[in-house]
Length: 143
Image (cartoon, rainbow, N blue to C red; front, side, top):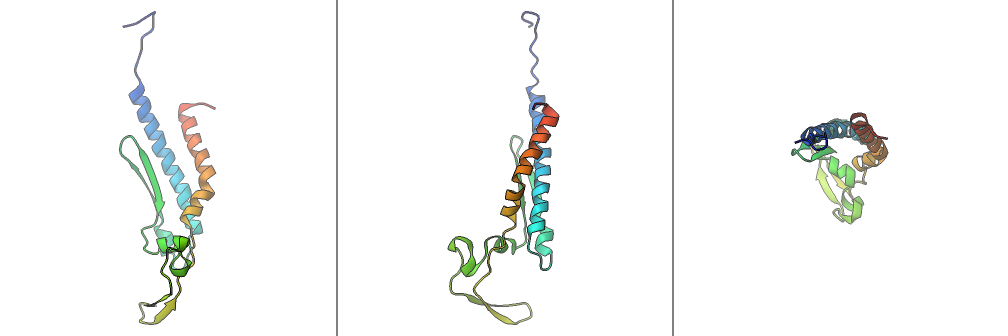
C-alpha cells in the first residue's frame, strides 16, 4: 500500500544476485592475475610444475572463494623447501639418499625454498584490490 504517494519495491534479490555475479567476475579476474604472476615466478626445469599452476573459483550460493595452486607433487617442496633447508625447521634432519628413475643413487641435505605462490599473491595484492574496486564501481557506481 502506498503511503504519502510512495510505494516500496523490494529489489534486494536482484541486487544480491548482481553483487554475486560481479563478485564472481572480479574473483576470476583476480585469480588470473595471481596465476600469471605465479607462473612467471615458478622454477622451471621441465616446465611441468609451471604449466600445471591453475585457478579455481567456487561458490556455495552466498560465498565466493578462489584459489591459485598446482596439483604437481613437487610444488609444495618448491614453495617451502625440504630437509635441512625447509622453512621453520620443518624438514628432515641429517640428509638422506634417494634413487632417481635411471637407478642412480644420490645423497642430499634437501632443497632451499623457491616460493612462487605466496610471492605471486604479495606482488599482485594492490592490483587485485584495484581490479575488484573497478569491477564493483563499474556495476554499482560510486567514487
